[in-house]
Image 1 (cartoon, helix red, strand yellow):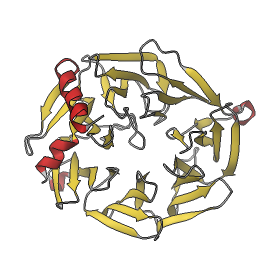
Image 2 (image 1 turned 120 degrees about the horizontal axis):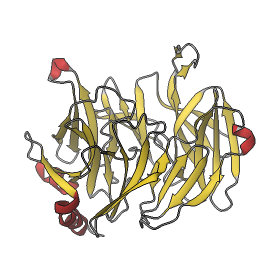
Image 3 (image 1 turned 120 degrees about the vertical axis):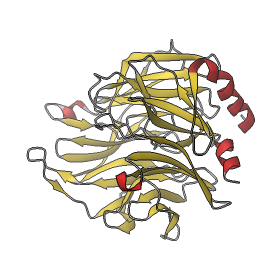
Length: 377
């Protein structure tokens, strides 16, 4: 699938299922998914893809004003850009960020309560049960999270589970051949955002979170954010110390981790050297880099003192050093549904997908990467 054909597919589908939205400052066009007046749409969490490599099947979350929260208030849907159809699946609920697309096939893997499921993008596809946590782990216990977002090992054999049960964190893997659960370690510390390396099937990136007392609400801050765990048992902190790092995601070649230093900007951590490089000063809340690492997208929140409150969507061309704002949205009043822009490159970097807010409703939005490159040449 070439860049031109993927973008042509988007433009061909646009009149029926997308609405054009032009950013007045830059003139960049984004394409917003059409939904009924009472329904909002949202991209899947940015740590993993929302569509296949060919930009034919686009999965999304959808919800109504009375949905509740991201814990259990959203349902799944899929767009077929070739057929020009939007299918909402009201019986496909998922938890938190617990859904991700296999970019090679367009299949979706998602979590609901203690179970993991997989299905194809055809509206008539029947979900297949992948497995679940052992009953004895969850019986009469509070399962707060099965998985932050499904992450499959580079060899396709295992799915990482960074589960939270009661006040403890359980890191393990689901064997995709037989559905068996392989426990790795249990900790009173809160680890989440678990991600297999895209190239090393034995290596996992984990993030540390604050410890929150569920009775008092008192928070105990962590002292280091990023950790590597190897299946052989080795475990330790990586990257800069302190609390300033967050929203990390692997580089496509497995040699780097991209994250945001909330005091400085977008950072690239080089695994071989152990050095963290400031790539984009003053920008970033969530960030993602193209596979070649020449292009970067990020959302960035500004306050009233800088013309906000607003979320800005920005693109950096590292070849030229130029950046551009391509979208802007007013932050929602409340955030129970986790309505952040969460930009991510998709379809082999041919497009950027994000969530925007228009007239009180969120919407999935897509912008061709070629347009952003041309604007920053």
